[in-house]
Amino acid sequence: MNAIDRPLQPVVLPADWSPSSWRARAATQQPQYPDAAALAQVQSELSRLPPLVTSWEIFALKKQIADAQEGRRFLLQGGDCAESFSDCESGLISNRLKVLLQMSLVLVHGLRLPVVRVGRFAGQYAKPRSTDLETRDGVTLPSYRGDFINQPEFTAEARIPDPRRMVKGHARSAMTMNFVRALIDGGFADLHHPEYWDLDWVQHSPLSEEYRRMVSAVGDAVRFTETLSGEFLHNLNRADFYTSHEALLLPYEEALTRQVPRQWGWFNLSTHFPWIGMRTADISDAHVEYFRGLRNPVAVKVGPSVTPDQLLRLVDVLNHENEPGRLSLIQRMGAGKVAEKLPPLVEAIRREGRRVLWICDPMHGNTESTSNGYKTRRFDNIRSELDQSFDLHASLGSRLGGVHLELTGENVTECLGGARMLTETDLERAYTSTVDPRLNYEQSMEIAMLIVRKQAALARPAQA
Ligand code: PEP
Ligand code: CO
Image (tube, rainbow, N blue to C red; front, side, top):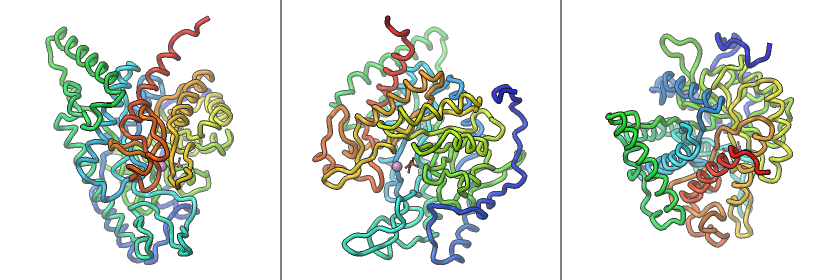
């Protein structure tokens, strides 16, 4: 039987899985905690603290992702590369929300599809690193691995992994979630009031004219529908917002993995949509074992070294039942490699009838260092990878159903190019990321507009 035709239910819990079965495998990218008793104490404390999300929300997101897999929605996932405890403040959180809401308005308007909104926040505190140690001026210390684990300052004390930071990170995640939920429930995302999402510094942006036109068109459509139906459209008052992070630090994730009343199986209740990073996605890695037994929708980053065979085996482990909405593949190849590396993977997934949502992360395959020592990304490469990905999927009879971006609502200068043509000397002006360079507001909006233009072009019959 073709996998697509298989019955959807029941999806069974693997009998040989438990929230701690990952411990029998080699777990890469984990800190070496100096005090095992302190770590155990933190895990026990965390396992009693309230969860951050509910199983109902997790199911609702899974349904939305299943719709996106069928082409009935588009997924927008974005936020910081690494959240930091000190950035847990109202202005930064609401600005990030504003950018995501503005981008989703552009996408809804242009694609004529509902958007699944997923933040990279409320738990994005653990980072994989290419080396365990960092050397500066002859001094070698453990690398900074994210605020969940240690601190970025280059001192011996700051770099010691401290398990108490997980408890602080859980609290910061809860504060972030609480504020986002309160804003949304209070009407911040109301489509009747897109002016709530205006960011002060963008009034003179080269893109603001185009955005204003869309806002006004959406406003007209809303008023028209309300006049016609004689009713106020209450369901436009709020937008669903989901959270995601790289579930890298397994002791934290395990402590937040829970059972809930009247449901079978286990849920990661620290986030709606955890993902496995590229460096920990090997089929033998403890992360794959941990993810295998969750009921959440999950994602895995797919880089240029993955072969079709490896991908199919991974997909089989992570979504054995081919359940709708369960698995997303976040491709991150790089602008120069995507045309060569992506097609065999897309073809294998299609040939085997595996149900996945393809999401393009055009950021992580396009990182480079400048001559003045900054880690950056060129907007042109980001745009090119995205552009090529849409075409490649379309030409293979597949569909690119989402985008995964590192972005911020602040006026940072971390990525080169874009509408204001930022140059290497601009990087010094406002580079605040502790790990990877993010798109600023204007660059993010440009990407949203580009997606709309691209989809419109793909929908038009080819000119003779
Ligand atoms: C990230 O998303 O910040 C990241 C580290 O990505 P990747 O696993 O794709 O390298
Ligand atoms: Co990153």
